[in-house]
Length: 121
Image 1 (cartoon, rainbow, N blue to C red):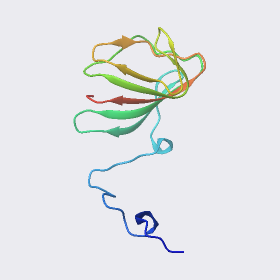
Image 2: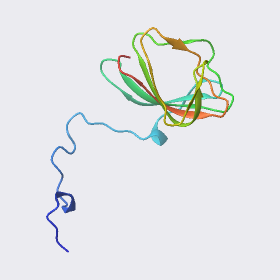
Image 3: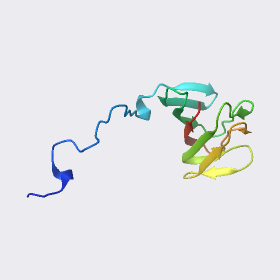
Image 4: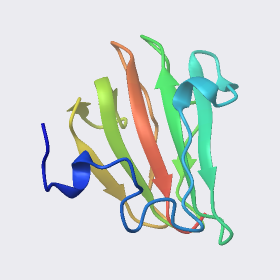
């Protein structure tokens, strides 16, 4: 079978492997326990302090103290489970933007996995 589709060729597509493009897989990320039942898996760190990570919270886990967003904002996507910020529950599929200077107490009754991005460090 032949086709004229550029996706059917063995040659690289334009823009593939662009310099500076990086990737990682969560299974290969080192695990750091922040608090009992709360683990961080760093995925990427930018030159300006920006970073991306996966945070896993076991059922009943609670951040010790208040998490203050400084120097910049925090972006959170709930990958699985139900995340609670100390005020309300956010089910899987929820996106949260926490501006610089805001705070919360991350916790979960059921357990959850979060993708967390700090655009300014």
